[in-house]
Image (cartoon, rainbow, N blue to C red; front, side, top):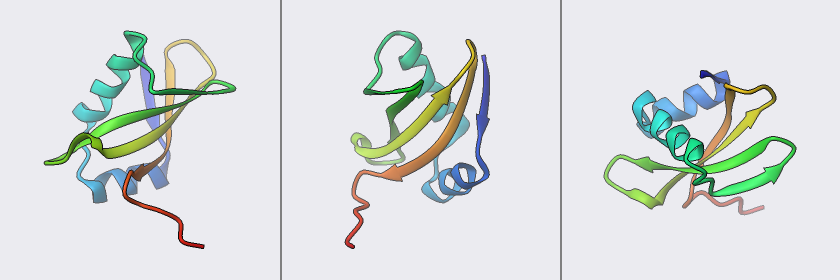
Length: 85
């Protein structure tokens, strides 16, 4: 499996304290058919653990795939983040 991260995602992940091992664990769950949300068009939303918060209070990631074995982390956000506009 080949995994890529957008520059924006990488910056967010570092700020959020997410490690590559946490992200790979989320992908391993997807491989076991434990996908949180299939958004269609090969786009998925997957929950990830944030340090000290667990999975339910953690973060969400958007993952895209076009070819078998190639995954792209596109975007991430904390569950508590809300757009107030």
